Image (cartoon, one colour):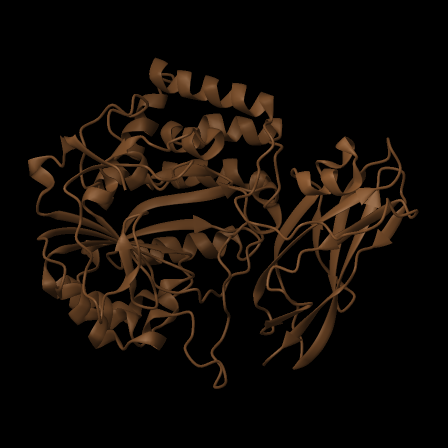
Length: 475
């Protein structure tokens, strides 16, 4: 990694650390716009699960947290839904608070009982929560929100993701919550879940972004400025901790095991960003050196700081959007109007070696990313598929690809991305925008094998199936 020695970590942060911990992939929600491959249940045959406490007991995790040498630590815990483990999670939180060095922010959907945390100093646990209309009603969410606040938890942020299915709820929900004193904002939807290829932003969505999104977050989420090579302080005092005990320096560096190998040594200067685009988490954005869109001194960005930024921005809006924020929204609008085509970072298997273009109007392939026609999974697991679909008829492109598992439709893809190897295989420049991908939930299935089929449909209404896959349900 490139070190920027001319940008040493400011002295006031030498004894500070950020830890970002994805503790679990368990979740009781199935949001279509979520990118987490969540798991719904435990099973005797699965062995170690996608949960930290299935890899190491809570006592060992608390000992691991003691190994962090800093005295001022901002810990972000996310998932999945961290509060689903009602046995171990209260013990973990109590132990971290007893340590005295941790200020904790937990991402949660609030579907849990605050009474399970009686006896814990809940004022030091800051909750970042999002309302998901497809999973619960607003009256029920509102009831839980107030109950949890009345129990003493601090709400650092309350939001709504601006996915297509949430747009009709966002304005009324956010307006009411803000009138009740909650720090609110709307999150522009990132490409994930069933919307991995989504490019368009409706005028309704744009209006909600302008009115309810925090400008800096929206700017990075929507325009995705190139950050590769920029000097960034985030790796100088930040760790990324994984549910299996893996730990690495922030968003860079090799992973090692915190239980067997200890902690990696942090650089004490800014580091050149190795990624094309910043992942966009609030802590990372605000650590880019001399970021003109931010312009504030570097801090650890504790939950209280994040809340204060939101509240101050919402207050300032009452007298109109400030010129700096207005400029960010102008850039966002220009970017959305240009509608650039995103290219996934994944490495795909080249197009099948077919002699000439097939006669049937739609044709294509499902990528064998694992080198096999069979995917092993569990009932209700989330899986990722990709492929390409093209039309033999010039002027009649493929408009959609529908995925079916055991004849149940699980996804519909209507946005496509470049697959240059398809152009090379068939010598047709018009086949460039043929790539598709989807992240979807399997239906409830018994143990056994089931077909996964993909149907491509052209602009002229012609349809055809791509070579099929199978899924082997293990539990």
